[in-house]
Length: 396
Image (cartoon, rainbow, N blue to C red; front, side, top):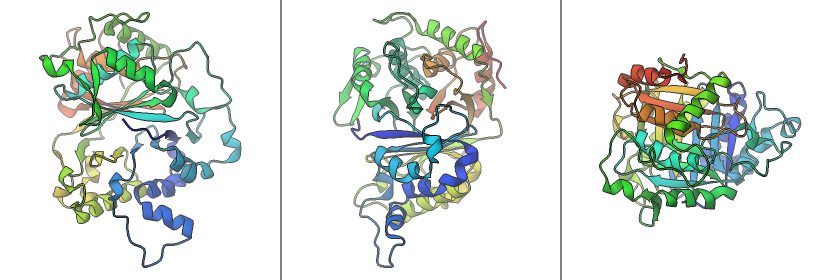
């Protein structure tokens, strides 16, 4: 678990061009230094630490709905805040504005050994949702002019599935409560992995259903994940939130090579990776998600068409022939009291039922949206699962 304070930044796509420079600074520390010195000298040498491991935690995501950034609070204020117009900083309406979260966030790393990606999503989000915590973004988190309701549940919690690990982004003030909820469901912090591990999951046979479906929470309703699913989808219908299937966007999940970290890291490979990411930032694809940490190689979700930007095939680890299709949910209309969106959606896909076979999935939370990613061959079953039942959704 990282202790560094993080900020969450929402950049509307129509504002993206204005913020290319700070995005590039996040990927190139020397570029950030050059901004302060009005140009780097020819004798400047790169840091001995690989650029990809200089952030305690960083996520940059570009989706059909928005650009979303999670970075240190210091860098958010240094790189992004100066570009936000003063009038906008004091605005009490959302609209199409760049926003930086008023709350400080921290990230909790969770290891999902023994479970597939979809089950990991359900196993992690269920205890938090059942405890009344927000496992999804809400617009109230961004605007200082809107008061926090003191008797409301805890603030938004964001979920990111990567090539190596899963991460929960939680408000600093809620960290203890989140850890307590995880530990109550069998998660324990493993020092060697620097992550929380579900001990119970390592000692049971996995199936298409979650262990949380029949265990009642110690807090008020919903009493089961199935009930939470019903409430989630009823809320999405009331708010006219329709899942958008982006059939023409084919994603590959990949990563930098683990053996290139440390003192013997392959500088050439990391340079190719950095150049490829720079090209993606300057000429943004329809979808990109990059996660950097201090302890793991870069993890990426790339549009298939952008893979050649990274040069030789040995730069990226992972299959380039298995494609994921994104299904996006624009969650900006949700009220502050909305809870358990990730868990509700994951439960309906992973849990199966209603005559629909369970669907493997992964999930990406961004500032104003959620993205479900399913294997291309499972897409029609995923759409059928989201449509199924009296509280199903009309997927577009």
